[in-house]
Length: 310
Image (cartoon, rainbow, N blue to C red; front, top):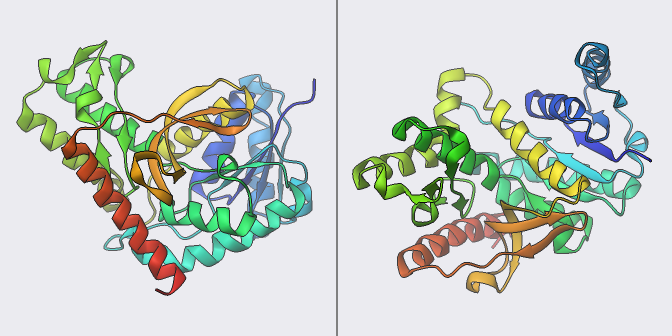
């Protein structure tokens, strides 16, 4: 049986760590591509040589040539500049839009049937750029943000409630930024509502910490940004697609009227399988949740208007 082929664009911390997770899980053969000569080749060879120790047989190659990515099943786009202290995701907008647009055109040339998973920031706007540059239908361009933001949310809940992270179930909606919406009403610990374990004040603190989860790490690192959790999050999405798992995960997808939003990439629950994003799971939101989601969508819309020059 032919193994899936997974291309990762960008051999920095997020891309290289994603390659590590993918190889260790034997999800498919990995192509690590980057403009820096020697970097993808060296990292790929190093990772390949860990196979005899870790016991995986995936092929891992590094390249500067997009021809090597031909016929990829999934393409993960991590290319772009990372945030630095004092820099918002929005500051990266136009710089990374150019980068993401260019790499999307290159990967699509060689893999016209692939599914694109966008990780570059500002995430929701970069997913929009990738869809526009690729010409792909909406099911084959998906942004990774919700899985990461939800992982942070669940980590903080588990920590505060002193329970296993495995028993915390919850997700985050909206854009990948300050307007994200941790959906506390739907959060539970082994099916028991979150309010049973934590006070409203504590839950509100967790919501705010989740919104600032990325910048908290940036401020610690001083140079660079998070990469363990972001790479693990995108690999969960890769696995859902290549194994056709039909996972229902929080993802940035282009909405087509769901939640009253159209033409924007916004984080919602979606079913992922071999056809990419196979279904948007539309929940019945209360008025507060609708207001917060619309506010988040407006923030994404503002980014798109800047990109479009409006």
